[in-house]
Length: 170
Figure 1 (tube, rainbow, N blue to C red):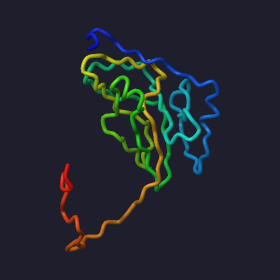
Figure 2: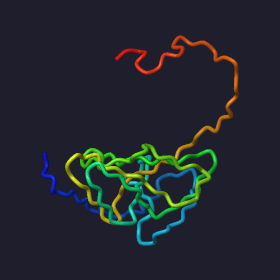
Figure 3: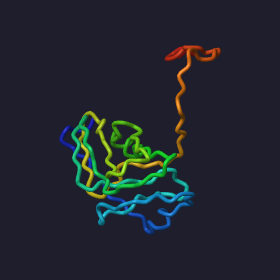
Figure 4: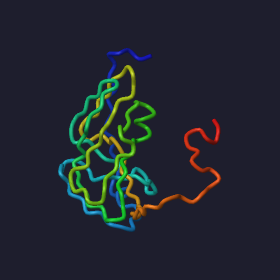
């Protein structure tokens, strides 16, 4: 068990040529306003990555169990029929216990404000320091169905029926 006084500090990682990862093969363009001109645009670490990394605008210190709403310095305009989903970065979660409180965070297509991420330190003993410019989460943009709900008197029968939590065994 690490001593309670230890603090993990995450180093800012830069790619040799971030432009090659930024492009990907998009089939849609998303308007983006950079609210903090000194931070990089959202980037993919690898060409085929589903998510793009988001960066923090300020130094962040999280005590064990603490949560904090963190600014990313960007605002986007998603097309209708898409949703932005904010997920934790797997390496930060596995190595440091850093996660997103409301995983996944949801960005609706009509939201135009700054994207913010609610981070939490799940480690029970060690604080986490995130220097300004750290990659803190990832944004996935996905197409989404926008169904209309129709009220009916009764739903059609299925083998499962109303069996829910634990109904198929452990």
